[in-house]
Each structure stands twice: as structure tokens, then as C-alpha cells.
Length: 51
Image 1 (cartoon, rainbow, N blue to C red):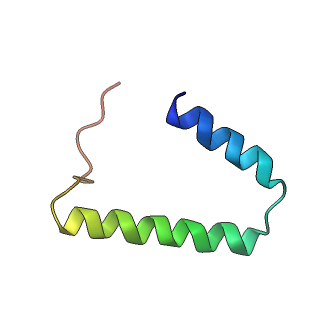
Image 2 (cartoon, helix red, strand yellow):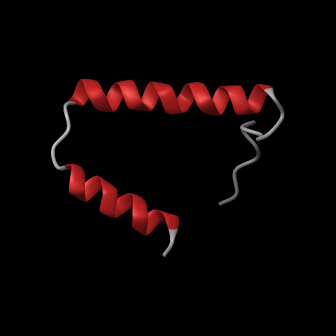
Image 3 (cartoon, one colour):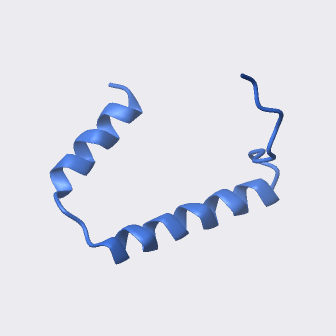
């Protein structure tokens, strides 16, 4: 299964979630992404957009 399919199924199983919990989770994701970028594991620089 694709990771997206698994994530979609997990989200559907959770049902409604409070907005405050969503915001908390989003902040945690951003924190992890910034940490990975600082370590050089990923690059989050805004590259040239293609249209």
C-alpha cells in the first residue's frame, strides 16, 4: 500500500478531531521539518516555480 493510502485510512478511522489538536500536530510537523532542514537531511528552500 502507498503511504498516502495508509495515512488516509488512519485519518478516516480517527473521526472528527478538535481544531486545537490539529494545530498542535501541525506545529509538531513544522518543528520536525525545520530540525531536519537544519541538520541538512532535507532541503526546504523555495526553489523556482515552474508553470
